[in-house]
Length: 275
Image 1 (cartoon, rainbow, N blue to C red):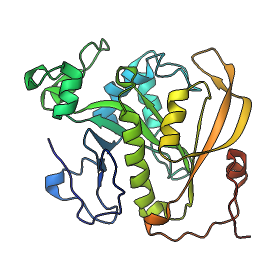
Image 2 (spheres, helix red, strand yellow):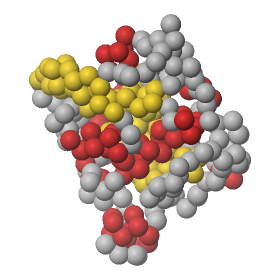
Image 3 (cartoon, helix red, strand yellow):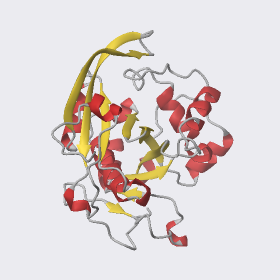
């Protein structure tokens, strides 16, 4: 398995799952295949791609459990998922609109978790999936393609969103991916103008709130009957807004500016801002 190292190391705090990031200012080497934006012991992050990730994304977007907390309805065919994927890519008007695939690496830990043993021949992270896949997709899997188990990215400017296939819930993957994503995002040159990240979760989605809190997000405004859940036919649900300030250890000095109306709505407080 490919394991990337930094040509220019970034300041990464120690943790249970250390993270390796490629510096955003360093061009990838050919040996790296420009494949992964960040790496942790069990996961890779890779820019979401229609050519590589469409069918795995469909197993998430078509799963009612995956979409339980989303404003969107489940997709019923691959073309609907293709449209979702294309709407998750950056544009000239929304350059921040970008997603990364969370990929499962085959390591002794993940092999045992998926198979209950150490037999590489038994490794099949797609076991049990019933969605139709193309011949090209099958060939990619035979050639060693990694399984997409979730997606993470910026869904609105400064605002993180993510989802993960229910098959991989409760194993710490989302916490690992979120921490990896945050470290990567702070380090990107284009994001140095931001001093805070935003996120939100349905208060009933306690697992997601725990993931955010473990990554350092602080609670902001609580909004009653704020959003409509697509899977539940538009039922109104509450929303807990949270925020994360840029860490002082990032080495980037950003003047805390006057908050936008959106940031005020998310409940960012106790910050001295410039007029």
